[in-house]
Length: 185
Image (cartoon, rainbow, N blue to C red):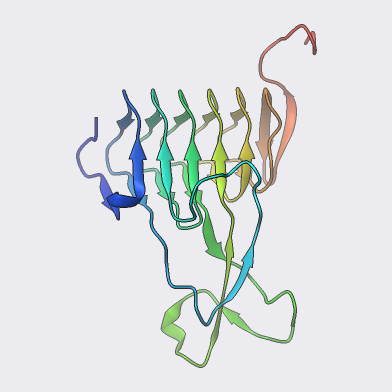
């Protein structure tokens, strides 16, 4: 079900599984962008095996109202993932400096003119099955492993281990999400 007010940019780059609900006023953005003439840092995510620019949404997924998924770097969401209201997932974002030359002043938008340098970070994102991303959390990179929970208002910058309950900015593991024989928590 795609609810009212949902905006989908470049639908040819998006795959959606069965029994998916994209709630009111979400924004889904996919596809390649022209990154010529910019400073670009690329992060490798060995769990992302799809094409840069693709947005793949598994089956049984709910994307809450007012969420944004920007997949220019690639985003994969496994089956039974929940992204609560206001979640932001960005696989391409601005980067605050040029790593190889800290003397270069970089900018965050193209409105500054052609002679200015814009800096981006491209970071494919994988959200594995049964993960839950709570209200207003932000995912900027890495893999959220199976059965993990991202607490409200958290910022994910790196990989989250399987069966984790994480919180904070940057998000860190607080405890196991579910009791298992291995962790006996």
